Length: 97
Image 1 (cartoon, rainbow, N blue to C red):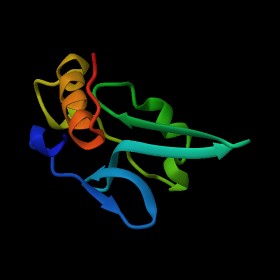
Image 2 (image 1 turned 90 degrees about the vertical axis):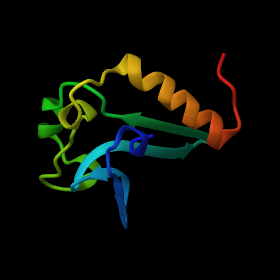
Image 3 (image 1 turned 180 degrees about the vertical axis):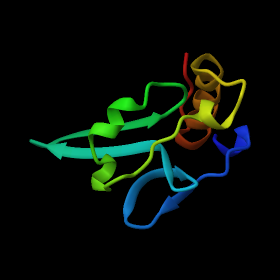
Image 4 (image 1 turned 135 degrees about the vertical axis):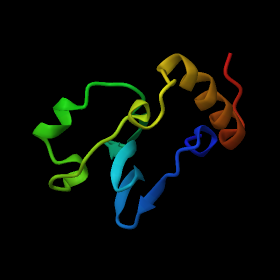
């Protein structure tokens, strides 16, 4: 999805998530607790990143976090939702209503 928006992203071996210029732009998570599986996905579109300055994202000291809006002029959540649905449909073979 990021590539479709002309954002060149990559992974970093040994660290979860998706990165742009070594700044985290997306997070993936999975946890199994008491036999239940919890999972999640987040993409930083246009949010306040200040709270990330108080933690070490993924346990990495001084890891910077970036929004899609920092990289693109005309992007917002309303434009990203259909792209997410399209790619989730494609890769999960699931159609959103």
